[in-house]
Length: 259
Image 1: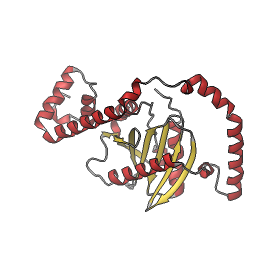
Image 2 (image 1 turned 135 degrees about the vertical axis):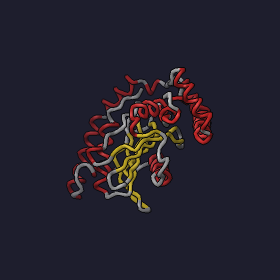
Image 3 (image 1 turned 45 degrees about the horizontal axis):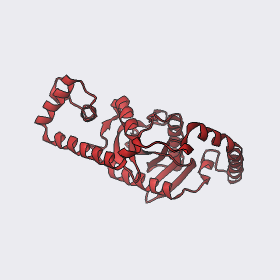
Image 4 (image 1 turned 90 degrees about the horizontal axis):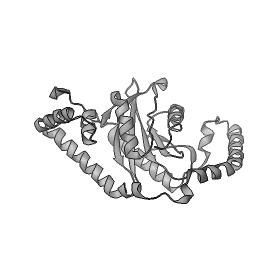
């Protein structure tokens, strides 16, 4: 980092988060002194972080209610296992009857208002950032470890960034965004043909939902909510391709516990 011309976005984010050693911090400050555009970007990031803290920082200081006790949640979850199994069996019967296949059958549950809002936010973010050539993301995909750590801290969740290379998509990178009720992470992927998909992720403290496929205005989306995360995968791709990418993403994200 001693060469001013090798400062990356990951270095700027680490500087903003106070993660650099004194010598590294001095190098970044020297770089910013000579690069007003990047200095303005860092200032904008700092203002965004301050706004998020002002809106949601108090949540970290609140005492979780008794109903959210891990032991109580686990007991309640066990009580509902029977009903969940019955619902899954009923969904499977409907899938077989409709010939749609087991995975797509997860989308038989209609979204509630919260999920509808989530899908709208995800589609808006996708439409805004995927056309970008120079700055589609804040942190490059090559800095995956830093990106995962940074977004996990901002979302207050352990965010395992999905590897979609088996489906032909590589990680472009990610960025932090404001959402309706929290911060949001936007992960961007691209295939060899230049087609891009985005995975929009927010903290979730509500109920779990099944996967749902939707399409409008040339964009398709697959949305779902797990215990810790609400997710929407968006792209201008065939239904089957997007569902395969969603399935691969779900496998990684579902294994991520709260931090």
